[in-house]
Image: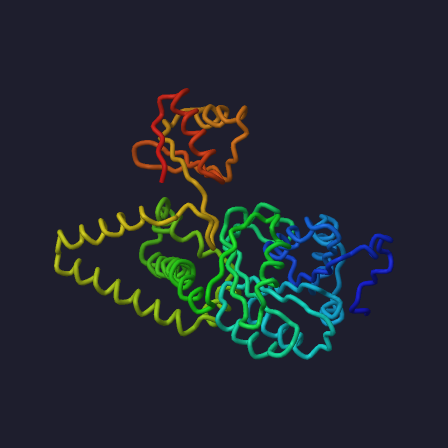
Length: 381
């Protein structure tokens, strides 16, 4: 079976191609990055992967121009290579790239959630070559997966962190950003270790805690089976990310091992402190614990797109009567508001309709429409 997919049927415009971009791993993130590159004139995007059917689908959707299963052969012809694969897999691809006979300058980037290990490898592997590695971490995502879920606006207004190796000229970094300008992301540069410290706190640790809480509930449910049925509201919101890809998060923790051990040790200390307060029945100190947390959260940029998509949530207190949800949603039809998600939340006395919007402007417009046309209370969180 041939590993290389023939490209002889390409149009005559191929001679006008200025840049060849290789996307390794055409899923949600790789597909979105591919869409960004395709907004540039005279840019040809090739997808590489192991699943031919998925690659064919990506091509049929216009996400890539062509595809192949032969990484090395395509890499030698590429001007830009994006490794949209788990960090450990990206490291293997980088080792392969370091042994290829490149005769031209190539920009290499990745899309992994940790940067220290991969940038360190790039410093070693690509030293003295014309291979320029720019670590990349687009801090946005979706609960959906696969190339079909990719979209050009997925990273819009989200932070796209760059951690370039020390040999990368400023002009090359600027050039790389310009290729992806259509994504409308906020590019910022960080030292790789700084990046890994920050993400360990605001992204990696929350995933560990969510998974731990779910497993604690699993054990608890053996004695109290009804717990699984009563879990809602805060439990659901806090544990949503426990449904993330186990393979990916195993890779993230192991590629950021030393820093994650620090965060976990700090977390154990925090839990130990609140355990002691509860044991002592210290009302004032427990009150201070929750108050300090509430006050600090209100200072955080929670509604900026981060590693997990951060939406703008509007809650509407609604009565348990037929047609009320339809009534509220009907108010938005003429305004074409960007509703991302709709959720009905049950409480003891009444219900709440949670409406998630992609931006603050749409939330405020929706809130104004509800207040002007109904007597329902609505509030932001």
